[in-house]
Amino acid sequence: MDAAGRTKTSFLFGVDFELSEGFFIENPLQQSEILFDMEGTGNGAAAAEGGSFTFVASPEEYSRYARRFSHVMEGLRYGNSFLTNLTIRTPVGTGLSLKELFLRSRAKYRLYVPGRFVCFSPERFVRIDKGRVFSHPMKGTIDASVENAEETILNDYKEKAEHSTIVDLIRNDISRIAMGVRVNRFRYIDRVETNDGAILQVSSEIEGTLPDDYLENLGTLFFELLPAGSVSGAPKEATLALIREAEQGPRGFYTGVAGYFDGSILDSCVLIRYIEQAEDGLYFWSGGGITANSICEKEYAEAVRKIYLPFT
Image (cartoon, rainbow, N blue to C red; front, side):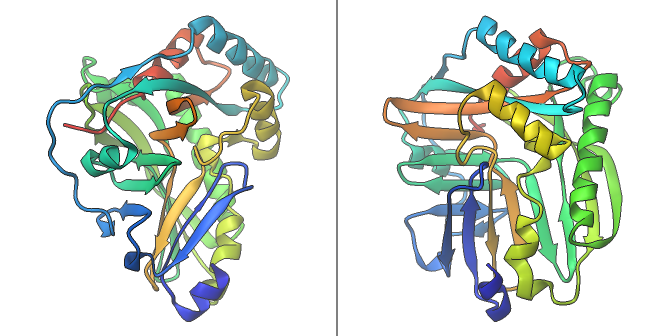
């Protein structure tokens, strides 16, 4: 990434949550194996219309989730974390292939890696453009059909505290590589259409100014921000240890990051809304942030509600 930044060579990249695996493709528009669409830029065609489809999810039993939730809450009570992202891995059945899921999905960020996963993420990680870095952490989800849904989530004490913690974490992360870091917008609403109705997501915008030689150190600066705070928690290192204890297995590319550099602008996303291809079938990963004020039943319901296809 550093070398490509110096020569202003375009590339597509991805890195997993554990920072143990990744891919890097120079001039990715010249290949058609890995398909991507980063807010309208990429080699993936616009979302295609399709006929009927099946989509069946079999989430883990509530009791299993509750055990892991309890472990996270214990860590929170001991002060090891203020906010921990807890995830579930759900078997799903559909007559569509990963590629077909990619081609029919509608999302700000889409990525298809054959034989591995498809992702249709609504969340930007960072955008680097003309010496400035922007991040849009997304934390807070509610079903749009709930009466006064927008007011309900914006006025929810737990949701506001959770979101504030992530904004503070991301602001501190960006301060490691940029100057003059500020929050431009705090807790605005994005609407996401799904096959099961719309959901509302709460995001904020954070901005900073990069050093003059940022293109020469593009990868070095970027990796200073990993893993993404919105899908790990705060404080980051202690929370990552708590996640490993609670989840008892690697996430892989789920909640990692991917992005595209066109020679001038780098745009990237958090790999959420993610379906993994495993030897025994497809798995949809989802999750949410846990704080001391979290209620287990609500957190479980939120993780399950995020299991959707972005089809209208």
